Image: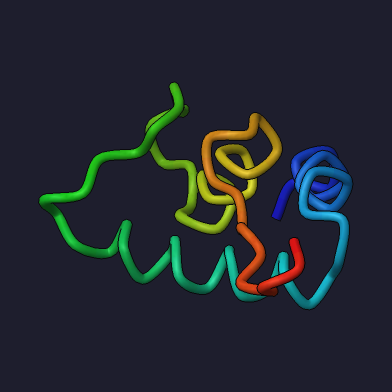
Amino acid sequence: MNPTLLEKARTAAGNDKILVNLVSRRVRQLNNPAIRPLVEYVPGQGFIDIALQEIGEGKIFARSTDATA
């Protein structure tokens, strides 16, 4: 896991619990060969790093389900 990607994603997500859920869901999606990454990546880069990169670049984000938001 790349620490730089982790810090960017942590800042973008704003909450570690949300980040864990975003990464987990995105890695499950990326395991499906029909799903392509939303960012340029280095061949051999792991799905966790790709998910962190997508989150850090704002391609993947969580939206609030709170009715007041």
